[in-house]
Amino acid sequence: MNIVEVENLTKRYGAESAVEDLSFVLEKGTATALIGPNGAGKTTSLSMLANLLSPTSGKITMEKDVSLGFLPQYPQFFPWLTAVEFTELAAKISGVETKQARLQSIQTLEFVGLESSLHKKIGSFSGGMKQRLGLAQAIVHRPNLLLLDEPISALDPTGRREIMNLLKSLQQDTTILYSTHILNDAEEMTDQLLFMKDGRLIEQGSLKEVKKKHANPYIQIKFRNHTSALEFVGSHTWKCEVEENLVLIPVSNSGPTMQQVLHILSTEKQDIIGVEFQDASLEEIFLKVVAAK
Amino acid sequence: MDQTTMIMALVPIIIIQLALMIFALVDLVKNPSPNGPKWMWGIIIVVINILGPILYFVIGRKNY
Amino acid sequence: MKQFFMLLKKEQLENIRNYKIYWIPAIFILLGILEPTTNYFLPQIIESSGGLPEGAVLEIPTPTPEQMLAAIVEQFQTIGIAVLILAYMGTIAGERKSGTATLLYVRPLSFRAYFLSKWTMASVISLVSVWLGFLAGYYYTYLFFGEVELIKVLQMMGTYSVWVLFIMALLLVASAISPNSGFAAAIAFSTYLLIQLTDGLFGLNWTFSPGKIPQYGLEWLIGAPDSSGLWGAIGIAVLLILLLFAIGSWAAQRNKAKTKV
Image 1 (cartoon, chains in turn purple, cyan, blue):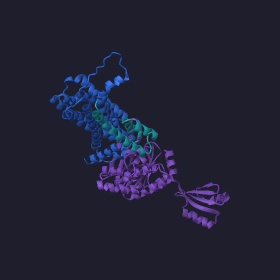
Image 2: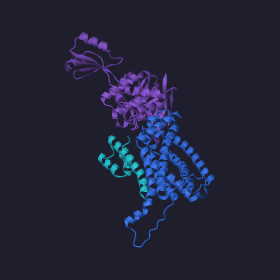
Image 3: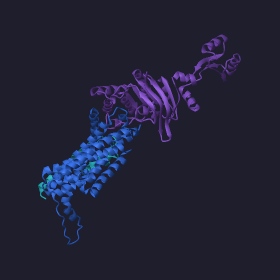
């Protein structure tokens, strides 16, 4: 079930193209990470989905009962309102009844860890508190589609972890699309990856698919020394590389499986220190894909 | 001008000046970061009649 | 309608917490007091400055109370309107420029309610300020120059209020179409001057011109304005205000893409 379908979305400013021919779908209840360097068109794409910008061409189709929550990269607040006054106003404009709006505001502010600042003026908030408030206003009306522009990049590692956990807990009943350039975090919460560069989608798929396509995993055997590594390589016909005391065997259809390798090592009584399965990180894959296009 | 007229003319001005001064001073005390040194605004509010507090409200305070 | 009231409450909180609700009326009261007071003390001021050459006879005609009230209107028309424009130029443009509007614009916001709530709050504060200013001026005029019938002053204030509502609608449209507050003020100022200039230069027979409303207001003090002219001008002003509502809501919606994300 698709909650959002984006077809050939394009945004140009004069001759300059910010987003070019972007197509993807968001499946209900999934989390999608929009990944790309600065200036890739992530914010422009999210702004169009949030109905702030109208596309030059292309189409965005949303399911009928979509209720949307949006967190800009640098959310700006009325400094003279208190946190609870603001989330309440936000909820009410999004159609929540007055009484319920109050209740949900308090719950949501507690959820993001602002329970001790409910009645403080937003003007006195620190950057981290504003980021939390930004998340609170995005979810206070219980939307089923959340668009988050760099929700965690402005936070310190502890805050990042906390917000990431909050987002993961929302995932059950919300479809999430978020942009980020912190790829470790993306790896943690993603059913779909969208790589953007220069306004274009250059790769998309699930983490597994993208890894399979680009990651080139290998089995790494660590020997006691270089000689025994060479000895091992000499006695087998697999395609492999030797680096000092390491032997690297790419995982492929023609190569051995981990099981086979372990079996051989145990029967041959080689002089080894360890065997490991090595996988490329999302960051390495991303750099590779970006460099290739 | 007789004295009654004088008093009747002065009383409203004094009331307005006092009200504005009190509002401005209360805000100045609570304001964590006014636009400029606090003591300077204190003097402006107290010394310049009516216009002092207005100046403070318009340019002395940041927006909260 | 529901959104109108929640947004009006937000505007109200804003005007209280940034103290506009205090300092704008204070300025109008000051303008109202200053005019009769300085006029009353003018002879003494000139005398004490010792600027008169020997033998010169100082003859300043004492203004009538009606002339005094007209002078106060003159002050409101220049300094007063300028203060209102500066106070409310950023109402929409400023919210967009700073990005505070973004978190409202991504919601199912009624831009008509949005525009009207802002116009309503700015108008309430402007009208209260103008009335308090007139009443203060009226009081000092009464003290120093003599009485004018209160009913005449109220009729004058009522008529002038329509003009203020019109100017506020104009100002908020300027704020809705402009990229920033300064631009909005420039548009509002120049339109304001243009209306008065064209009415003054060519409008001798334009009895329905809204630009004549302040003048009609003053005519209450010395009799009564031409009734068909007065109601015609007010009618056209109301129509223009409604038209400005439509333009303002439309422009605010259209410019939502310009909010800082």
